[in-house]
Length: 290
Image (cartoon, rainbow, N blue to C red; front, side):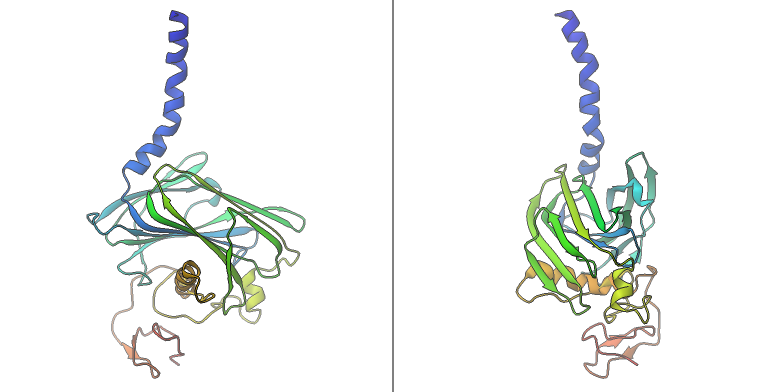
């Protein structure tokens, strides 16, 4: 009996300790009203998937709110960590405390507003024309509503996603999107997303959609916000509409995240909405400003 107890004493601490970081991380995070995870394989970087995490912190959570989120170590770190005061508003860069480990990079920050956005690139597994990508959401944050969106790469075929994303739509950029609402997700609950497809064209989706200028947005810019892009999908599919609209705004300033430009406000000739000096398109109706 004593030998058994000693064996248990040796075995139990590692078993519990293995889950302790996940529990501690989730316990220190605020509750999210919405969490949207988007995957854009080979969108503007070959052999990699752009992953975008968009979250809205619950209204009863005091601000500024501390956040801790893990991203895959293979990503090499975040491309952007930002916040906004409103959904689809200007994204401003956040100061991040980064902790590197063997499997994950932990990002710690305090957000002064309720809307956050994290972006990173994660490598694909490529064997000839076959592409595979796997992502594990560790349940770092509890969400009242979690949704997934996958952008189908241009010229890709035989694309499959697990879990199954039934809703699909074609955006004005010519790319297709799939999505699904997964409902409530408790803190600590894991979700694995797997994407598989075939593709022989080595170019990125952005290069294929806009071969004359692959550095330009694939769709019109709709405002001064940085790191956002919007895509209108099939009407009637709520989650597609929400994710695509946010996506179109993301692309409008993908190269950097910064504060809005002061002074020199202009107005749209079509709808009269104000715009920032560097805007090329109206943030309300999308009409060209030049």
